[in-house]
Image (cartoon, rainbow, N blue to C red; front, side, top):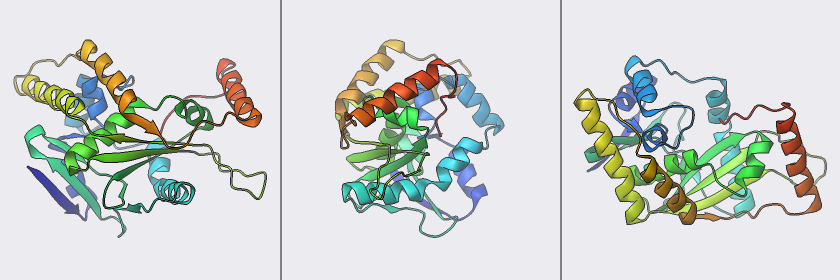
Length: 251
């Protein structure tokens, strides 16, 4: 059973999130978050120790910017769920104890908005961020939408001409029964272990299968920039990473 909550206070939203695995947390359960193991995620959840940081605050502030440029570039008609300040829409798939707060919808699909440094966006034009894809997929499960779009915009919005030129990576993913089953079965296994007071260990074999199934299901809607200028940006980004001039962090 799916339930939609219209949440008007931050405390109510946090209370609902504590009762479920959220879409932002599901990548840890699935082994797709290299920064947080499932048990680390669960420890932070029980202690309510993670309250956001500068990266998440910037990402939230720029959601409307990502949506605006996505609609302009692709001709889409997505609108933010949060039309009133502070009013969130929280969806729960009760049998999986999975919850999500999607960014935007056009009535037929979802849009997940992300921002990051230009070096990450350039790499995601070729291979998407699987942690973010898992987050979007979990949102689809909670809302029962069949497809969604992941749009990632560079935080470098500087322009050197009158023509709009942005580093953006975007693509769509459609649900399929095999990915549904993998995610739902792993969530069931996670909750079973937690309720028994046992440690949950990621099934690495299943994680690898999920990785390539997500990649196969992902369809780019903005092709990589293969122009000389675009390739020069890739080279500059790689050089910056090599010499430690950039810290690869995602919002």
